Length: 116
Image (cartoon, rainbow, N blue to C red; front, top):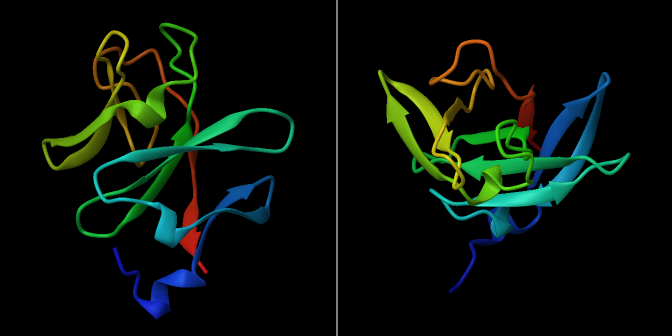
């Protein structure tokens, strides 16, 4: 697989506490699949690139099962909203807001992202 030169230096960054943190080279993301990134303090983010090339980042911890697995979930859309379905119990989490689409009382952190 050859990676275009314009993608090799681009980093996916997430905003944490007002600061931007580079967490993953764009070249490491495969559209439609997730990647886990270790954040300062030991928490994890699940990073995604949709098939249109738009990046997303949410907390990697499944609040129902307690495991760090959301990065391994399947992404899709429901009513035009991008989501990831947990590989444990299949609850769907909105990739833009972190809201659980199957239980309105549950949400995960959704991070502001940019490519830099």
